[in-house]
Amino acid sequence: MEVIGDLPRELFLKILLRLPAESLMRCKYVCKYWHSIITNPKFIQLHLNYNYNNNVCVLLKRCLVTCLGQKENLLSLVCGNGFSFVNLDVDLSLYRKEPCLQLLGHCDGIICLSNYRDYILLCNPATRESMLLPESRLPCYHSIRSLISQTTGLGFGYDAKSHCFKVVRIVSYSEELRGSNLPHFSRVEVYSMGTDSWKEINVTVPAHVRYSPCFETYFNGAFHWYAMDDNGNEVILSFNMGNEEFQVIPMPSFISKHDHSICSSLLVWNDCIALVIYPERGIEKSFDIFVMKEYGVKESWTNVLTIGPLTRVERPLVFRKNDEILMEGSHGQMMSYNLRNKEVKDLQIYGIPKSFSTLAYVNSLVSVKGGNQMLDQRDNTDFGW
Image (cartoon, rainbow, N blue to C red):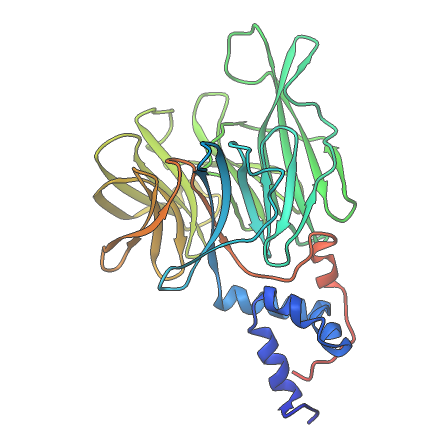
């Protein structure tokens, strides 16, 4: 067995696998041999797999008010059973003062942020790489003849067929004097990291996306939005990143018409889509959790759990693997609820009320400039495993 210093080669590589990407970014400059290992696509894939299995954290985006009274965006990580908390050193200098900055999605350590107007940013917080996407081909927020255009849907995910990250954008056009809140028609374009360009795709959008930051979710190779069909029924609209097609997923039977007195959040729990229903207002709130046990099948929605009633809790944010759900409190604080012992904790993490957005996140070395295309190439390096 080959020995590196006093360590067997196999043990040395397994130690590297357990290091966070931030440390590995420094280690790759120790010598050429270390650099060749850490930048190798096979190692990057193994490191990613290890973190998916062992180190899934929560990425938190929130707004704070500075001493000068300005709003500022901040990215943080919440990790471990002890809720260790660290602010990420990510260069968001162009976007910190953007109060409408939205956290769109996460895939393989890369996150996507946008203001829904004039920029979309891909960023790996661990490697501190970021990339502003090229300008869209479809106009937004200005008049085209008698039509008003607006980005109504953005989604980020991974296409396992072509091995690249994609961003989908839905632009809806409505008549200025039509008197209806439903768009006249929609156009769709897809950005592919492999070509670093946008393309318009010829598809019909079967439902009208309604913005809801607690609802947008990437799961099972598809991005999901809250939407309404032509009959006014609430539905889930999904876009498959592989075949670039839309699908309408029905809500549970009792949620068929829009009701302003209730809210819904779409989360991922135990590898299933989970819909959380709760009242919009109230000092005390109960949260009904419905799980879709068979993806896309309306009859498979099952009410598996009711949380509460709880006081000082505004809305759910994200499930963690250890049967805990993180929630936003009514005064702009992050809280946790343990599904087993029903314990509520105030995590002492604060922000402007209703500015919290969260994602399940893994630390990775995946580059925003080329992404996972490199991970799926065949590599001849033998790590001896």
